[in-house]
Length: 247
Image (cartoon, rainbow, N blue to C red; front, side, top):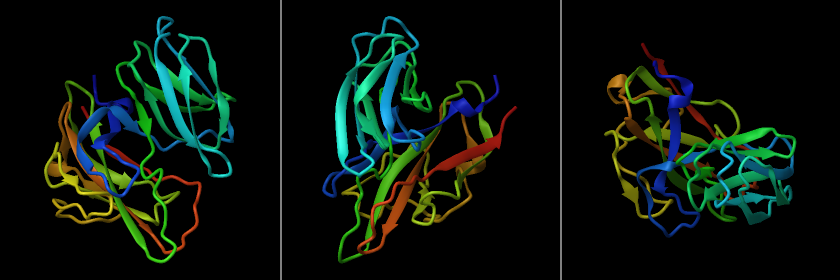
């Protein structure tokens, strides 16, 4: 079967801290997807599985209220039955299963506006830069790493390139592709400039190495977030997409 959109997934790196002292980057974490979506309006969160037998897993959700406060709670799956959160979320930042599920776990707003699915065998999703804050006195620059992967086990994506979605925080974030595929480069903390990005940072589009993403292959992408001194918090997003040719 040809490469389709669902085969092309953006995953996080193994190390995605929310502080400025911990190592960032490393290899791909194929269990955690990068997420860019929110409920269409502030709402409680509904979770459910496509498999009636998924009743032993707990999903920890972290997000923000409409006032910007960070909130978190653990929700127990009950198979295909809807389970509703206690808190009301303006944004969902991170969701993590303590044990992978046999079915697809759906995470939705109360009006069933889909936020994202957690596929069977994966652990959750995370928003890049979800706890990065501006300094009162000085400009801040943060770096985080994600990967784009072709999950098709047979076919390659040719003429492959990464493009920034020109919306949300696109004026604040640039991206750069690592010089080698499947690289496990780390940086000391999220304020350290990563190396191994010969093409530098920009808004793209930028071609994958050799313009091809082979079956089960993946490419590292570093994001660079630039915040002005005293910049206020904003409820927005940043997203890149991959395109190419398939047989």
